Image (cartoon, rainbow, N blue to C red; front, side, top):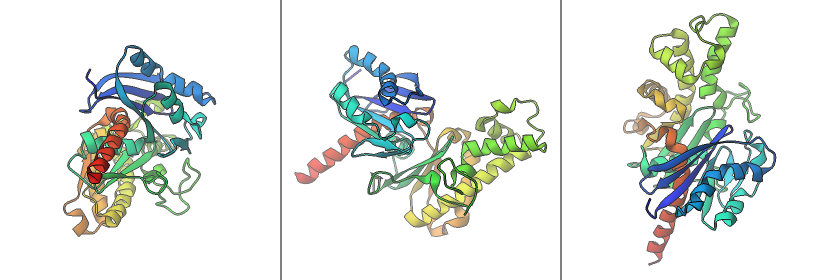
Length: 325
């Protein structure tokens, strides 16, 4: 396998994806493990580490373990908080626990920040020094690369895009606030708009589908096929998100915005709508050279992005060494 092997752990509320990644961004092995609903954080983490134990037992030599998780993570302490999907991990010292177990470097960060790092090293962000990574799925996440480095802010929490208020006293968000972008522009919100229309009786174009099986992929397929209700749901989400991104472009004068998450698979259809609404808000001087592009890593972004935390740390150390010399 070689010497430059890293473990990436992409933690989700239902499952975690764990993989061995080389320094070219290629996944060599991958496993999916169910996320336990236990309140005991050790039980949850031990379940995630079963594939790692197996590889470790086979004498696979990996250089470190990177972990991406939904919620706020303090990069220095490795402590996670505000993780509603996996409350058992909140305030748990799982980074130190894994370090002690394998005697290797272990780092954890927000999953969208991990995705931004992965895209920067291996994906759509390779040619950019200043970009925003936007992940659109169950929720909305963000990661910032500024001046060719990941930007984390004072405590490591920067990039929390999903909870920027776009409508004062608007729809209730899972975070407890009202009017966040998530309930207006996430994949969840697109599906909810369709399901609400079915309940109210004015959407008939989904009569051949069990409402429980409706997902964003199906809504996009129907929109591309010309279904007006599906077009409307996607148009509404793109309008809110595109205008929000336009404001961020005005603030940061970015080179690019990379759209990831499940919605990135829809390709140009969604991207073009985002561009249109972004350009309504951002100044032309800021958008004339701006690139809005889909992510390249797609389903592997979580694993590769998590593993990239270790690569990013190595890169920073090498830069510091060179500056001292």
